[in-house]
Image (cartoon, rainbow, N blue to C red; front, side, top):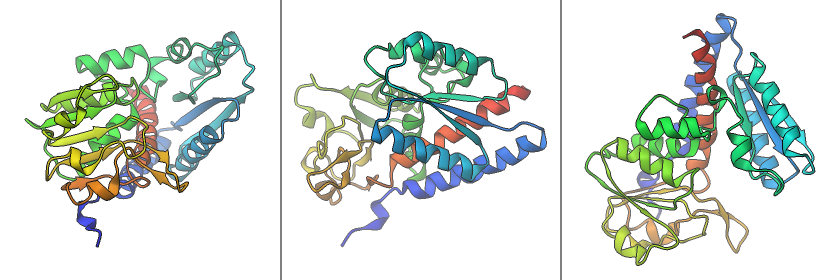
Length: 285
């Protein structure tokens, strides 16, 4: 029988964040400030369309104004940059998000860094990434912050713990390593060229896995009582959503684990709302 006390529920943590966001939005509204998120989507990728739909639903629940700006995948980089420039100059827009991936003819780095750092609610611009790494105030990327929120929810103290991060992406792996380091953990980053990953994970108190490979992390790769934060969202052979951790083999070994679905993914969306409100709050500072 599944031990539910081992599950770190993203639904509960996300709901708490959204309740606070809603209160913050109401307070801003009383000051005549109406938080607004503009989402740019290029093309009609089904997965991206589903993600964006969910983001707009979250905004509506919390009182945040949101708009969807769509372009065909034939758009030029110059046209896309012109739209970002327009949104940067629009004082009614507090958050700008460009849904990735973008078509091959467009340089993602150039597009992301065209967004004003003060409206970069994804936390992807070089300015926000740099400020994160030197410990200055910034917009923290939503998924890495969600991992920390889940650990906090589970009462996991990171100080002095051995943490293994599997994956070195700019979106998750690197920033989450920075965040756990900020909490005084000792961090090891593993990736596709790491030899004997299991030797690293078996010594870890906490494993954060973000590689995009279904069932990559198995129970025999963990030490008893480890905590697993599963960032992966994949489709299994049965067509069902599953994570990067093999839940069935991990659950008997771990002390805590995040589920997929119902885990970190919900936190990503909740923290996007929080960042959008933070941008609106910064106006009065």
